[in-house]
Image (cartoon, rainbow, N blue to C red; front, side, top):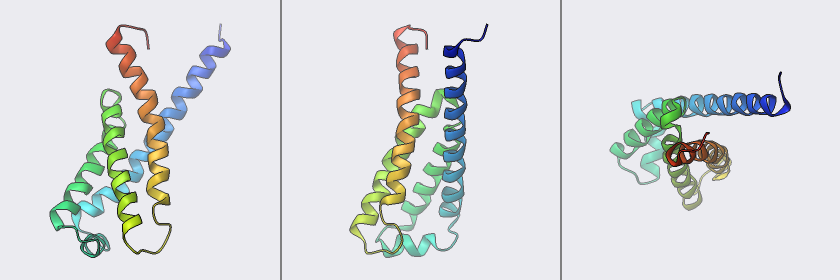
Length: 133
């Protein structure tokens, strides 16, 4: 018999995977060009005063963490890493004169990644404490 609790769990898991997939795609779409030096990323990082190795590192971290969002045992750590990167991006946008949305986009990512962080963190904690996730 399918209960409301089961349906709620299925919907929750589906939404978590959908959110994880969309965020993974977003990180890959931004991380790979950043890492490869595709325009306009080198110009942006130079204007912000960052070294080229920093751009490559951030792009690589975004790419690895983006893929890791889709691997449940690593998703918690990936979301935490991406929250840190996005907070750094928001800080950069706040401290440098730019056009567009400023820190709004990185902070939206922080909010969405925090959902994954909380859900995966709860599951991680329950597994380590011996409780059923």
